Each structure stands twice: as structure tokens, then as C-alpha cells.
Length: 246
Image 1 (cartoon, helix red, strand yellow):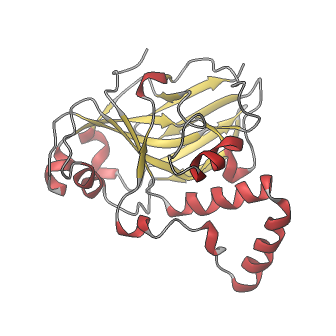
Image 2 (spheres, helix red, strand yellow):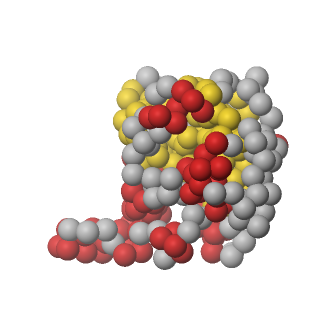
């Protein structure tokens, strides 16, 4: 069962390396001709292809979207492969749970409002994500159909002292696919929540995702989900979740 019922679900994007690697993986899978050009560029100049970097707004303020808090399932739930996609992916994130209301909060006040953390999995339909994003309305069916969180909620005092050094792992069918961490967030959690509360009230029980940890999705590693797969996502000191894709 869920450790709490989220009142809302905002998903942010704090890790630049995830954006770069996922963009590169998307072009590799869906635009192989263009991918060869980007490989040549990166090979010569030794830096990411410009289109793989986050948008300029990301450097000015946190960016996020609202997902569907009513389709979040516990982290031990068998998950049916969705009928509307042929590119089903997972995304390993740290989920922040508010315990106090916020409005025009300072970063210190915002940090004090965190009640706990969960492991968050933002499932994605990659083949329909790009056209939905290009619509100007943001993610729709590519994201809203299902997400999951760990069955335990770990209190803030257990996690915040190590917030930038938590190790995280992805296993598929028992094989270690990724070892990553919560290092190198663009914005601190206090700054993130303060921005979200600017001119907008936040309430206890709201769920905010950090965005995918680097290497924390199949689009980055080249291993999307298949029917019959067993997925395990874990963050040190926070918890874990596991799903069988049926």
C-alpha cells in the first residue's frame, strides 16, 4: 500500500547530466541519421551537442510539470505494459513529501517543511513524449498513466544530512544497470521549494520529484522495459521499489 496519498504531484528537473544523456539516447533510438551527426560533433569538440542541453530557462529557475497524483501505485505492484506505447521507460527519482504548508517561503523555511522522502518512479512512454512536449502543453499521455513510490516514507532528519551524497541503483532482471547518486543538483531543495511556493500556496501531503538521477532511466542506458522484466530501483537510506512488467 502507499505510505501516504499525495495531494498533488509536481515533477522537477534538477540533474543536467540526465537531460543530456536522455536527449542523446532519444536521438540514438528514434533519429539514427541525426545521431551520427551529433556523434561526429561530440567526438571532435568533446562537448555535448547543443540541442542535448537543457533549455535556457533551466539555468534561471527550476522547471517542472504537474503529473497525475491519482495514478500513483505502490512500489511492489505488477505493472501492465501500456497499450499506447512501444517505448516504455522507468525514471528513478527522489520524492520529497511536504509536512507543512508553504507560501512565499524562504529556502530555510521551505527546507523545514519537508516531512520525508520516498523513492519515486516516473514511468514514461518515450515514443509519444516528444510530440506531446512540442504541442506546447507539456507531457500528457506520455506521463500521466502511471507512476510509483516506495512503500516506506523515510523522515527528513534521516536523509537531509546526506542529501547530496545518496547512492542509487537500477537493477533489471537482477542485473545491475546503473549506479548513480543525488550529487550535482542544479538547485538546493530549499531553493526549489521556495520557488514553488512563490505566490502559490503548497500544502502538507504534496509530492515533489527531483527529476531523474543521471543514468536513472532506460533512455540513457539503452535498456527500455520489456514484458516480463523485473525492475528494482533503490536509493540508499530512503528505500526501494520493485515491479514486474506483465
